[in-house]
View 1 (tube, helix red, strand yellow):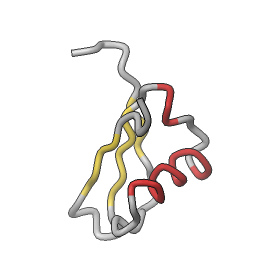
View 2: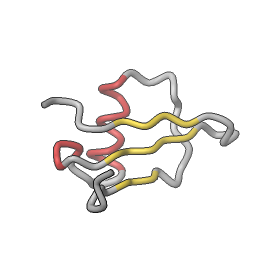
View 3: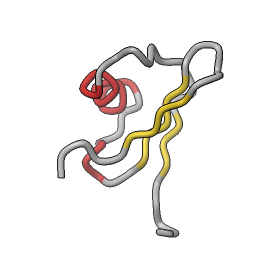
Length: 59
């Protein structure tokens, strides 16, 4: 396990029906982070009963 792994948690709920590119845009525009930097991005739905985790989209 990488001890230097950055995990970015979206505090606000996200519509998980968004495509990968839609969640990428949320990470980049709303969270202010650059997904290419190697972080994990964690999103949850409004009722907080589902999550999705994404890593670098374009390697």
